[in-house]
Image (tube, rainbow, N blue to C red; front, side, top):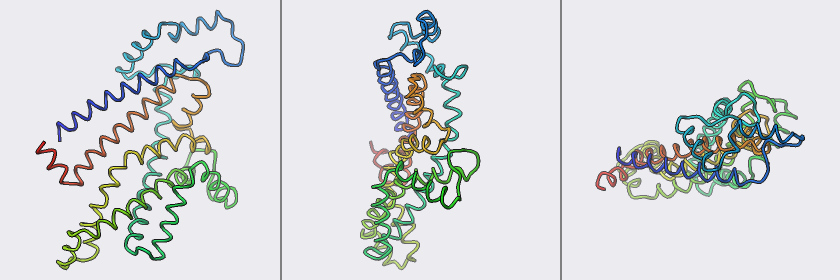
Length: 309
């Protein structure tokens, strides 16, 4: 296991370097000047600003300096937020986005598992049809369409939750629901199909023939093996929640990293764009590594294959 983790860490660092390089080159290939803006600034002032941020240096020198600062954990200064570094901006928004993403993930996993299990236990019944209808709608309706509906019904008409602000747990409910709807439906459909296949396996029939209680057959034997496909897609599932937060945070006015990234794109704030890309890449690559490790813990066959390799 240690050798496997070490190999994956090396691959993670190489992948991160490729992402940093491509994103850096794309940022400098975009036409336009991030300092000029709408107001007319004298050329002498622009020259001093470029010299201060180092953007007047050759591209290779800027790239080398950025990599050196990145190794030391410095993402550089923000072009638009005077006196603030990219590390500070991402640090402030990461805590907010983490709360939102964690809540959405918990909602998606808990209710998705429940819907998938109920649907698999009575295939073809009313519960199965209702759960699959929910799954179809959930996969078809994106979060940015669901968010205004939740605002109109639960915030404007019912008055249960506030919108366009951030402060208490009540402010997190609607955006968390909007983020969790699609992954919840995906989890329900995946668990249903995997559980139906597992319930027909020989080891499940053997467990039933031994006289084990139905709940033990379901939880210990069938459900654990059914979670293997879910574990495999857990990394992309979390990625979907992270990517979905870009638009959701903008709709609900949440001061997270997603909203910061959207604003930075419109402002041509290149260090924030590059820093956000690095931040999301590190998070997603680390999650994929954890998923691979968890996959081996859940499925003993993988541990045996690694030990024989």
